[in-house]
Image (cartoon, rainbow, N blue to C red; front, side, top):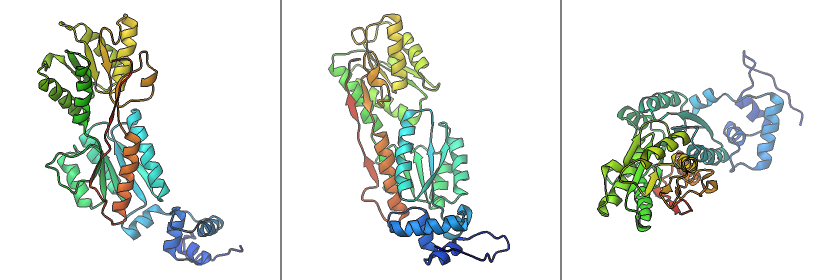
Length: 344
């Protein structure tokens, strides 16, 4: 293909219109082809890419956003990158969005509502096409930003209470039900003094706590002294510390339900170090079924959460909204599984 062009701009910058004219297609087709949208014929995509490369065209995301009032970016706000839970979720969401021609702008909130608000303000300056936001516990200012921006938004991990508006789009599972289900499993094994140990204390952790409480109250076994709540970040080291503290409690507990697998894994390592038999002396359970939980000694009983599926389904729901369509369901409950292993 013989390609030549005369730049008609003072800057000499090759534009989208230049590529479209040389390739013999419309500017919108060039835009969709360069995003790799599946609706564009592969041969046409290759032609546009070839022309673009030979002309030296570099997309200008700011100009695209200004022209369309939206970019091809999706803003994603997650609490942490050090937690495998959110890494798996993010990876699945990115793969789904990228296949549809969208890129992601990620923000890490560190479980701080003020930081989340500021990050969202910054992300909205880029005119994102959509938003993926973890949880439903945003502060009032953040909620107003989402509403006033009119940018399609899907919430991750949580499902709303019955009082929430039906127009809140979200994908997740019932944290309270999961907490109660694990507690009931331990009770059904004959455990009578089931402690709950938690760190970070974010809203999802507190919902698991409420599930634990409700199950013990129903069994008439609730004891507030069995709650071990530490606001520090979750870690294996903290799990070991909590385990040692709980094992000194009198009367002794016979099961410990940790709010996540990081803590539970640390507890199992501490049990090995202290010579405490699990599950004979005390059962240990976790939450999320993170990497390595099935390799612990003994293997960890836990709640398996569909984090990758949440990322994928939420991204698919957001794509539907960004296309101006209405998803078949505003809230999608992907459920959870109790994975019973040798630690209980």
